[in-house]
Each structure stands twice: as structure tokens, then as C-alpha cells.
Length: 211
Image 1 (cartoon, one colour):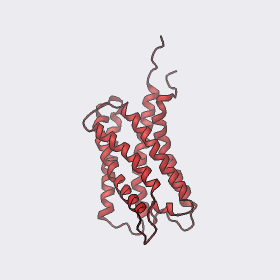
Image 2 (tube, one colour; image 1 turned 30 degrees about the vertical axis):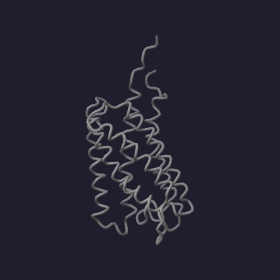
Image 3 (cartoon, helix red, strand yellow; image 1 turned 90 degrees about the vertical axis):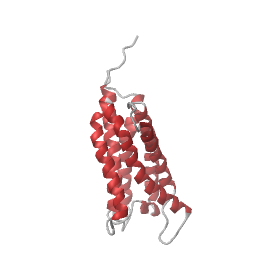
Image 4 (spheres, helix red, strand yellow; image 1 turned 90 degrees about the horizontal axis):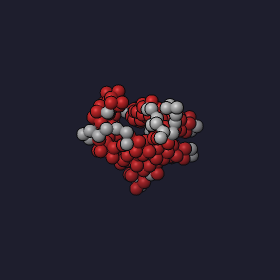
């Protein structure tokens, strides 16, 4: 039976699970915190609440699962210009997620090393992600089963860059939390779409004949 899950399907499966974990965790933590607004309050400020541990666990899980997902892409996509840079940067995104989960933002009025690391990692992730997937785009285009992902990857990458630029060029007073979540959801949806496509490719492959 060709359409069967096996160990080779793990990278695709964790790519599907990771974004769901983050979204469910964020909603659960946000809706469980009195006075917290998904629109006004930043995502990182949830870590300062009593239920902040839930968000941290979800980000840690996403970081680790992303590394496994990237390993799967490494072995299943044809190399084109920018491939290795894209893989390294996407793997680095997973590591940066671990930093964001480990080092929390500062309380208002405070300045700590943890908060500084968190801020640098957060903005760094915003820049790393679009550069990573745009670097991978030529490899998607050159791989027969992955061509359908090429245009979407370009759109997601350009949108991610535009949204990050908007952080510095526009005022999100009153809806910063929503703006952050749009940035995050764009990235998570890309991972989800690519992971589902990845799994479909794996399930469609014919099994090798047994000798």
C-alpha cells in the first residue's frame, strides 16, 4: 500500500502539527487572561502573565518541530541557487524561536539582558523568515513536485518583508497585537501549506518493490 504513513513522513507531519500548536496555545492563553486583548496587547506580553508558561511551551515546541521539518526539506528538494542559505536561515528561525520562548520580554519600565535578547530575537526572526523562504523559492521552482509552492512562497515572502517594514514605517498604536499576529500567521500558514504539500508528495510515491 503506497499511501501509508511511515518514518519518512515525520518531517511533514511535525510541520503540520507545529503551527496548530502555536495558534491553539496563543488563543488558549489569550482567552484565559482577564483584560488581555488579542488586538491591543503584544504576543510576547502573554509570557508575563501567570499562564505565560503555555505560550513558552508552544514556542519551544514550534522551534524544535521546525528543525525536523527543515531537515525533511533538505533531503527532498532539488538544490538551486540559494538553497543552502535558505535551509540554514530557516533552521536558524527554529533556534531563534527557542530563544524567544526562553528569554521573555521586559516588564514595563525595566531593562534586562533577558528582555534585550528577546527583543533582538523577535525582530531577527521577522527578517530571517522572509529571506529564508525567498532563498528557497528557486529550489521549489526547479523541483517537479514542488513547483506549485513556488508562487505562493514568493507571495508569502514578499508579504512578510512588507509587514516587517510596516513595523518601522507605520504606527500600530491600539492594534499592535493584531499586527504581530498577522505577521506570525503569515509565517505559520506558509509552514502549514508547505508541510501539507510535502505530505501529499510522500503519500503519492510508489513503494519500492521488495526483493
